[in-house]
Image 1 (cartoon, one colour):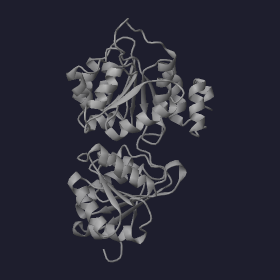
Image 2 (cartoon, helix red, strand yellow; image 1 turned 180 degrees about the horizontal axis):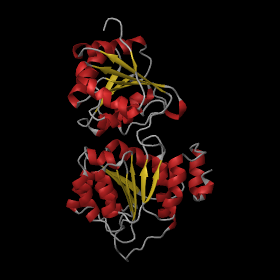
Image 3 (cartoon, rainbow, N blue to C red; image 1 turned 180 degrees about the vertical axis):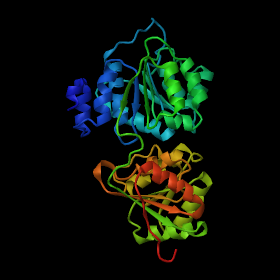
Image 4 (cartoon, rainbow, N blue to C red; image 1 turned 135 degrees about the vertical axis):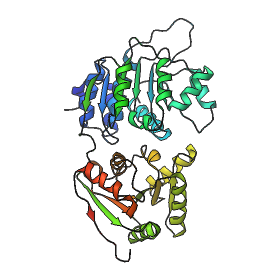
Amino acid sequence: MTFETLGLAPALLRALDEQGYTQPTPIQEQAIPLALEGHDLLAGAQTGTGKTAAFGLPLIQYLATTPQEVQRGAPRRPRALVLTPTRELAVQVHDSLRGYGKYLRIPSTTIYGGVGMGNQLDALRRGVDLVIACPGRLIDHLERRSVDLSGIEILVLDEADRMLDMGFLPSIKRILAKLPKQNRQTLLFSATFPESIKQLAMEFMHHPREVQVTPQNTVAETIAHRVHPVDTARKRELLLHLLAQDARVQTLVFAKTKHGSDKLATFIEKAGIQTAAIHGNKSQGQRMRALSDFKAGKVKVLVATDIAARGIDIDQLPRVINFDLPMVAEDYVHRIGRTGRNGSAGEAISLVAQDEAKLLRAIVRMLNRDMDIRDVPGF
């Protein structure tokens, strides 16, 4: 199967070819033809499966080939809306879509909080076809009447489960109420399908087709899972011990809280290892800088909370360390899914204190595989 056989336009194929995309991923193979036919879509796909292109390519093709009905003298209204849970993901999706649409002129903008309104207002005034937005800031624009969603023809909900986890359900419903009911195509992408998402889909989607790649909560076979039992009081020492064994290995470290991430990053930095932290309290600029330093290898350790980590897209990440285990077993999959991509080997190490034994059991049950439990001498 090639991208040509999926029915994509030559301008898109040219851009894909330049970016080195040769074979569609399973989610792209299944979703693109259905989306091009205009079906609503419920797609089960995790980060790293190629889902952005799965909704982005049909969306761009539609905008490029279907003329907009414009009333004479009326301002240009956005035609497509992509909702994402985090600023990082909004930026990432926007960059990807701009890349795919390189040879097609599709004006677009991102809308997210944590930055001034000025640039967003300018872009909306000039007129765009495509808006990629986080729900909170989009509501701000709706209240200011600076965005008109009455012309939306395609809606994409990306990482829908994450948006609901973050408490965006009321915002999403408010946004949906502003969209046209008729002649709208809706594509919903989610790693998991809790009841709340099925409910949402039934309310606002029209006979959606379902596609699912990789059964829920599967983990790349190339990842080695290790657990080190340790007293809570000595976790930081053990983390430092593991990082110091090979300070050249890029490592993503997960902590439970924003405050904890900052304290941990400062602690590692003091030991002489370049470290940065990303979490919800950091400004957009700080997050982007930390991420690009980490990708470029200037920073060896990135400490993150679950929320911040969903937007991290790094191809060759050798090691993820869970300083704190996640409260929800599914989040373990999202965390360690950052390593072992595209068949490369990866390590997932968890530092587990006595009071986290229950969380560990839940993870082992969900993965349906044993973990390598190893005492570290001296700990």
